[in-house]
Length: 228
Length: 391
Image (cartoon, rainbow over all chains, first blue to last red; front, side, top):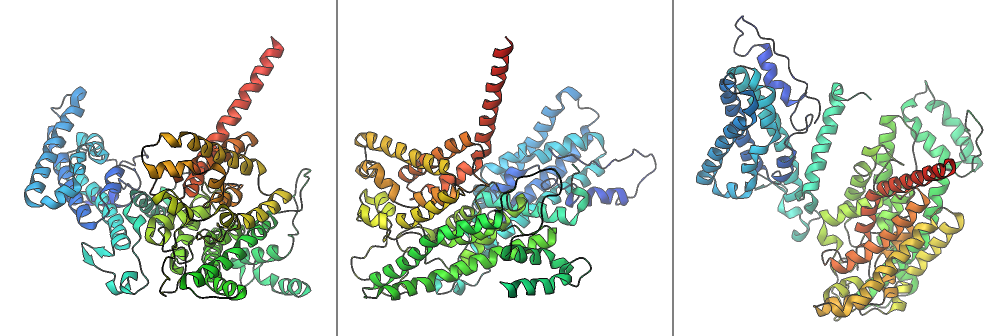
């Protein structure tokens, strides 16, 4: 696991504004400097598996957003009563209940997507980002901060997922959210010269796309480059 | 030559430090050393250096590829006219093929070298001519009918993801040319396999009874092939542009072996590996359930050698000095498995009519592991020798 550059939050008696500087950092840091996928390299499996199309990626992002934000708050509220030795089990119970909730809602209102996401909704339970945030943040911070941290990390996860899905759907299927973007008259079958890139639909290309995002990110943000 | 020398000397100040085009120095350096033997020498210690540098090595391989290229051009034209049921002279056939193949060569070189030069200028290191060979190999392992932009995309992918991300020439894990082909194969499967892509008809109607399937394509479907061994040896069969003619490839192989640039260990062990797998298949063929598979496995082992890209892959791809195993013992193991796996994949996996690409790419990945154990084994042997002496 990459080094977690944890934002040190000092316990202060003085009241902070709801969206003070430090709290804003909780939201913005995971988008770039400590992005769960590209910097900490967590939650890679779902990033590879469900980014073929934008819509499932969006639904997955929202599910993770819900589980992570709400879960963080619940764990944070319970942090003083959870016995240290069984905290992982308690965390698992919380995540599992939330994931079951999400799964049931998806099955009821978005059955097709739920089928497409199949096992990956259930696998949110084992998503390293969620357990990681519970362990690293929610157990040591208050509910509001934990909520912001959950949102920030979920957004960090979501934008990578959506970026990967954007390129995979556009280049692999020629569509975005199911709408044809590349004119059909360009296709070879229609007399044009273009053809979809089938490799974009295969998981290896998701890995390479994530790699390219990491490449671009590190080229722009040089403090992420490790020194040898 | 004098003209080039004078020209280079006259523009040199502009590229040196403080000059107007300082940033483009790698470009100047690349062209200058491409035309003339570079003037620099080692600075410290005593070295015995061969006069041959990377550029001469690469250009020798390009020379070795020329017979296959020329034959491929003729072959493209030959099948074009045959499929349309027209008669044409040898020169017409060759000319037509050249018109189809040369643009692919130009696109592959332009895209590949363009990206390499760009990276060299950004990263400020001198241009390595590793791409000279890859740029020639890429069109030779593509079907003739593939659109040029696909060649360009595959080349770009191979150079950037296959090579530059690892640190450029000499650092790549995979053979760049095969990376390009693998990319095209998975990205645009309908243009890379089947029985329509190997022959260029320019949209014209094909005469009745003409099949454009490759020998391996036919074998995978019905277990027999309509091409005679002699045709496969000479190479007037459909296939990727450069891979069909065993004769032309062997000419190139002779040059590589004579100059010592291609490893004879890899070529020989690859051949042995393919023969061993072929013999195993011949032995077990009668016990297979499906008839097509029975027939495919019963194809004599020496005929397996003539089909598909096996010889081309073993001579020009497996011997790539960067991605192959480095130790001598490792080369034997690496080459053997290249040939062995190539035949195995082509017979067992109906999705891949030819297994050479997969086999070599797979062994590229495994080569460092092979080397590791060869070196470990050597260390162990020597340690034992010391213990025996001291005991």
